[in-house]
Image 1 (cartoon, protein in one colour):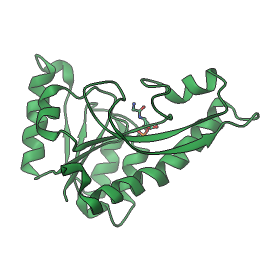
Image 2: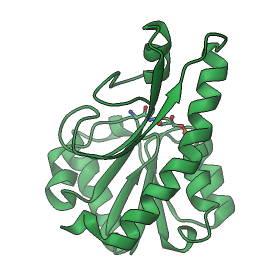
Image 3: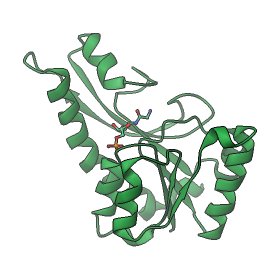
Length: 189
Ligand code: GAR
């Protein structure tokens, strides 16, 4: 199975996928919407081709998603793995890749969708939060849940320690989910 990873920023989750020897050979492409994102350097170091674009250079979402689709076809991509891709997926990509786009989100969805989910959970003073992997639909962090893992928010946690805890869980959790999907072929049901 051929994977494309989509990311917008630091790329620590991209790195966790690259560092997994069972996943690395399947990663054919990084799709990135920010020319300055550190994740690009990570891909270059791993020898993974990068398609980078700037949304405002296009007339609309359908135009850049069509280019993404062309790239995905070029690398015969079967599954799109969103890892910190901070952009809603539109009908152009969803139409071709329905049930073949998976997203990672740093909360126990449906709680705290959208931006800064870790900060939202921390501010809400809930006792636990977590991470979710789900198939992508047209909504913001909606779509069928594949797996979740809880993370306890301790009394002494700061936003920094909580963020670190969530990221540590993500780096173990997301590669495991991706391997499960690769093994089961569930995304093409
Ligand atoms: C991760 O925490 C991921 O769960 C989150 O962005 C971060 C990316 O970090 N994704 C979302 O919030 C999606 N709604 P990274 O660039 O270091 O992998």
